[in-house]
Every structure is written in structure tokens, then in C-alpha cells.
Image 1 (cartoon, rainbow, N blue to C red):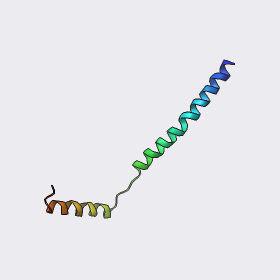
Image 2: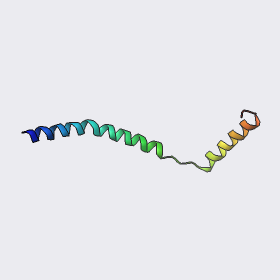
Image 3: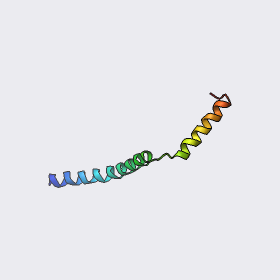
Image 4: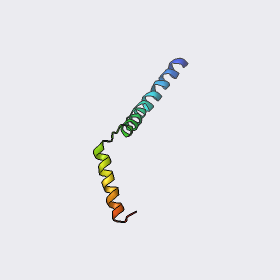
Length: 57
């Protein structure tokens, strides 16, 4: 009987925590999956160069 209660409690705990872990890991993966192309680099360079010429820095 105690084994059945412990197993049921374990299943309930897993049902509570597993969906949260899935959401957190999905969020972490979405922040790590990015790519930078040459267009992004050239746009950032143009913005930084224009700001430098405008004496922002």
C-alpha cells in the first residue's frame, strides 16, 4: 500500500514539474538559436559609423 501511495505521489509531482521544464527548455532554445548574416553586420556598422560621425560616442 505504501509503495502505491509513493508511486502515485511521484507521478503527481512529475505531472506538475514536467510541463514547466518543457516551457523553460523551449524558451532557452529559442534564445540560443539565432543567426547573423552579413546584412546584419553591415547595418550595425552603418549605424555605429553614423553615430560616431554625429559625435554620439
